[in-house]
Length: 483
Image (cartoon, rainbow, N blue to C red):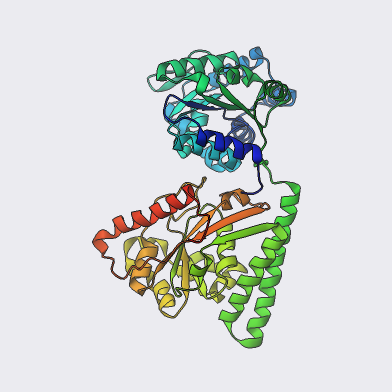
């Protein structure tokens, strides 16, 4: 949790204490509610960069963006013109376009707090839906990422897999969104009076009044007034579309502090000739300095497992580049990791990785043969612990992805235990593609070691699934005491 948000915590508790089952709905607006800002902005910027927008259209778009709230007539004109521009396009091409825009821009603006609300509803078995005036193609990437099956939105008319340029029904805007939610609830047997709604716009007032438990998220003025008069919860989240000025300054300061630690470590190496001691000095001092400058606190449960089972293979769930800084701070000495071979050429950091004993692997070779792990296994046998993210890539949400086998093969070949390290909230400090780090608290649970010496290759998939389940269970039921 980056900072305590009592209204959010109250809402999460209300969901947890409330009834379960699919007859309870949870309807989420998209732009401004699940993401910070508007997904269409990425589309217009992309068109401008590609030279697809005429000057007149750019001017008209800027006028509308400065105007703020649109009337129903203005919105209908905007959405109708937008879909008219897509006439003749295939659904496959539009899905590819919005998937690219999602990866390049939109996904970086996800509100972690809204994900927590969705996750809470999903755990209760509620019927979760996105209700938005945006088009299906804009929303689908997020719905897929969050595991949301249902979408109430503005639909384009399709003939033979191609858009005709017309609308299929009314846009899901204002009363149109409220009508769409009511129709969906009737079709799915959802009790709207017992259901939840979340939105930010003045045009969403009708939609929120259609559900029994409405909440305003980042509300615009008119919605905020209605929410206060009606006693609806008002939730506010830190901006994600751009880092706060203070966070940007702290990020620069943190990198500067780490750079100073690196320079001091190089001096220590020249003085003593001991690369390992210099690397451990850099690891500990750089991470301590960075956390202090950033205003980040790390709370560790099961800290005894960090030191008692060396050498070992530490495995972590992976949402952010910040995970590496967390591990540097809590493990501190005599550990390293693996990296692709080209990382050794990165100025400065490549030098540190070499000092720290990073095993540079050819990713293509590791997919073909477990023998390619030999550089990492040799380091473990020499007494160095390794830190690996078995998911292989950073995730957009705290959901735990599928684990790959490399870390487990490594531990089995070296004859050392696996030590699971479960990290919570790192993505709120620094998201998957963020460049800015925020202040806050990161929580870490270090689980007891797993002895892999008796594991057999034919049962590896089952064993890995069991380890992954430990991460899911720990994140769902965070331990209050020692792990």
